[in-house]
Image (cartoon, rainbow, N blue to C red; front, side, top):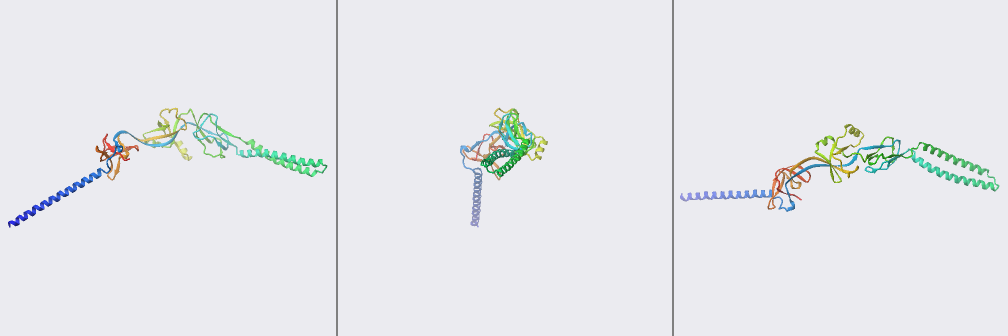
Length: 361
């Protein structure tokens, strides 16, 4: 019985030792697995070099939209004072013209026929004279030789009469068209300036008097910016506007279009444009017709904490950055982001000013 008790005591101690060993082994395994998982999550990217590091710093951010535009001015609408057919438009938008320069010309409907008749009459007069001289010489030669030239003279007079009839008919037609001809009717520039727009009509198109053919902006006119259309409702949602002209920024003021004018353009199938006034008088380098980029500031924040956009990553858990440690390693840090200008992005939560972040090249 005594030996039996000792055996049972030994077995109990052995079981307790095995259990403790298993528990310790499981604990070590679990701890190692957690450490491995943590290390893998925090060190997804190897050690970094200096050119892959950026500083969390404060600055201003702007979210912008860019629109193509041009410098224009108040302009005169130019038109012909007679009906006619468009001969040619001599200027293009953006051209600089002087007072009195010809912008466009029209001719009468029969201008081409008049030109052709002038050439035909000139040629016909020449050939008729040559033919008459030849026939008359033949008749005279027979008469001088004592031959009967009655028949030849009759044929000569008949042919001459027919030639004269055809010539007089063409001359009558020419005189009639010439009396109604407007010739070349020109539009001339009333002052020095720049051509803003010209008609889309092609050469030979019929144009009635008073139809707009070109628009001229005077050199002395107050310049403004004309761009792709932006509705008043849209404009009110934006922070500000400025123009970039020849490398210089100019603040702008949006000028809403009159609703009746907008409706008229829409009914005519014409595209409306937006008007911006310069807040301050532009420099003398700015000329009518110059290209301008209108910068629309959609949103703006000042002195906010920012990092490069390439330093912010996204996975199923959200957005995060890698904080660069002193030894060159990385520590994952979840962040809350805000406004971005495309190069840098606002960090609302998750980093501190002065910390270094990894930037993916």
